[in-house]
Length: 371
Image 1 (spheres, rainbow, N blue to C red):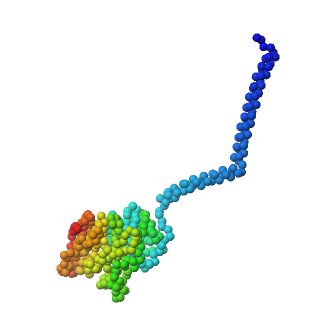
Image 2 (tube, rainbow, N blue to C red; image 1 turned 45 degrees about the horizontal axis):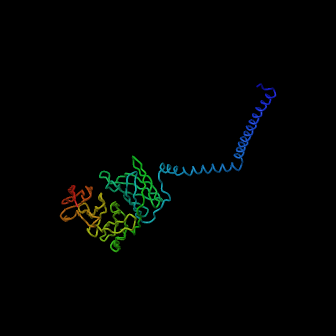
């Protein structure tokens, strides 16, 4: 069948109308998209939303800063030397003990503050040797000179502590001619001189005729038993003893929580000897070596030691036992060399024959004692 001209025209019209519908629908969709887009842009750039966005951004920044701040502090703390704050001036007679480290090495230190002067000792846990300390306090700044005795040079300077005491710790730097190390020592107890005199018989210690030479109590030779969790030390009283001697030592102890000291043993009362002070503790913390004696000149020194069992609270060895001092014809001195093991000690025995006092004959041998 053949289409007429009118029918073709009608067909074409119908096709054009469909296209028109499609174009109108597409245009409407485009308008919607553009309206949505420009509405979003307007809302984003409005003053109200701009402030909210700024606040939100500020909160995010603060949150990041807060989260990273401790890390920054921690890094700074590692890279900067530790320095104590609010230094404390010790203005009265006191004895203060510290425990801590010089570099990586554990130490114990005891200091006696008297009339602006400081004297004391410290020792490394790994060594049986006391290093002497002396110095002064400038406000809370403590500068201490370390010395050790040598046969060739006598007292020799071996180091310097320069730090700050804040009432709880002593922190600073230790140095000698070849190196410098940071130290950090925590206070373990702090006693007045009167508290240290707890074990002394005041009527005996301070006779009126000896009052002018009495120089108070001082803490010496601090050691620690890790097994018994106790500190042991000697308290020396310079002058004013019952017999007017220069020093009258006692061994005292205190628990780790820093309670007041109590007397463990009155050395001078039991042995009849009036000087001493050096103590050493066995590797297992059960035995205490205590040096004691009396000085009376080059040809009349009588020094010995005891070994005290801290678990049984009794003397288990006395080096003076069986020695007749009247027949020694000179000095007789026995003193610590080293611990061989927990219940054996090696010690020196020094004697001199003063038959000819002008030319005494000296002799030193090494002995061992088991207990």
